[in-house]
Amino acid sequence: MGINEATTYEPKILAFCCNWCTYTGADLAGLNRMKYPANVRVVRVPCSGRVNPQFILRAFARGADGVMVCGCHPGDCHYTTGNYFTRRRFMLMKKVLEFNGIEPQRFHARWISGSEAAKFRDAVTEVAQVVKALGPAATKVTTQASSKAPASADIESSVQKEGAL
Amino acid sequence: MNYTEKTKLIQTRAAALLEAGEVSYVLGWGATRFADKTRARFARSPEEAATLVYNEHCTQSLAKYLVDDRWPETRIAILARGCESRAINRMIRDNQIRRENLLILGLPCEGTDAERCRSCRAHDPVVYDELLWEPNSTGAAAAAELSRYYRADAVDALSAAEKKAYWDDVYARCIRCYACRNACPVCSCRECFVDMHRTGFQGKRHSATDNQTFGVTRAFHVGDRCIECGECERACPMGLPILAQTQKILKEIEALAGDYEQGLDAAQDNYLGAFDLDDKDDFM
Ligand code: SF4
Ligand code: SF4
Ligand code: FES
Image (cartoon, rainbow over all chains, first blue to last red; front, side, top):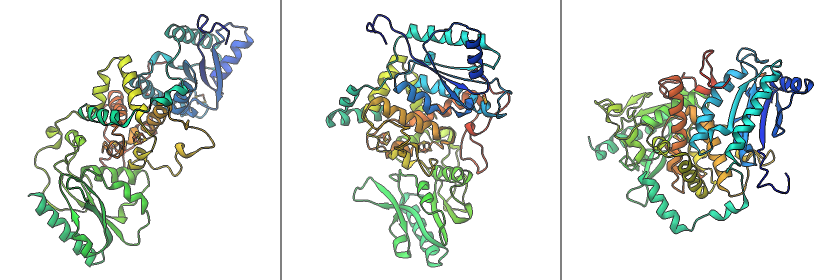
């Protein structure tokens, strides 16, 4: 990023796009010369069902400010049922992220078909705006965090505190 | 019946089984050098059966040991309370163990001195070959003092910023020993993602974020099959409140799909391993 990173903050957004629908949709957006924010980095996956919840956590830990998972509409999955599993998995994942102190607005899932180039553009634009407004994610691993290991006396007292919760 | 009488019953039955050669060993609890702690004990002879104990300090759930002996020469006898029996059901469903290798001695339980037992809704074993004493007469669900999701509820009550601070504090203390993974009876992959050093699924350094990535991933791998035994939390040497993670998953599954409890029988599907055509989604 630029020299004035602080003043010109641009979020990094990672989008997992299924090969058969959303990736083709993104391609079509390009062919049609549609404009959308350059914040998005597309990772092509064979099916939205390939996306492991850990990919999301890992993306946040390695500096992503927002993550999208996009696939075929229910019923249209190239592998027939892949996205039905995706649906359950990420409905749950959203709640788990929120529970873990990650703003739920940083994670989005969308069904975008191969012909919905405009929908892809709109989704990416919307997510980029939302995430930009939130600012940088606090989940990125920094080396300072390693000095956070507390002295054993702290551990004792906090373990007792935990017991009370 | 008090614990002394129950211990006697267990010892007598175990000795008889071992004497007759019906089982290769009896998996139960034995004393340690601390008066208020017990640990798993494998009684292999009638003499060893006399060293089995049973009391309110038997906080360890024994089921996980069964995967270490998948092909026993003769059957294994295991003492099973509610939590062990539900773990056994789930492990059978996951093809980890075989029912015919087990002789399940059911122990209707009154709860141990562990905190999680106060939220337990299934004290009586759900699968067994014989019961060693009468089941609890009162419905266990009604008797639970703590709510089913007590840990998750406590975290849910926090604001977004407090949640972040809470988990940062918890995971800054996690030493990534993976004891929580090892203790969990439903955690059964032959090769775990945390051990795949080459693929780098998992950062290796000590940072709260990497530790949390591990913790949340572990919870996600077992969450929809979690039988709520609390072994993960019991095993954690740092005393971290990690039961909250799987409780949250179960709580949300229940919100999405209605009544959900694992291990009640050996044929149950797990939520993430199945789907329904009209599952809810609030994304498009
Ligand atoms: S996640 Fe914890 S509570 Fe759930 S089955 Fe595993 S050890 Fe038991
Ligand atoms: S048992 Fe506790 S310290 Fe060990 S990896 Fe699990 S949460 Fe971390
Ligand atoms: S192939 Fe697109 S979601 Fe499965």
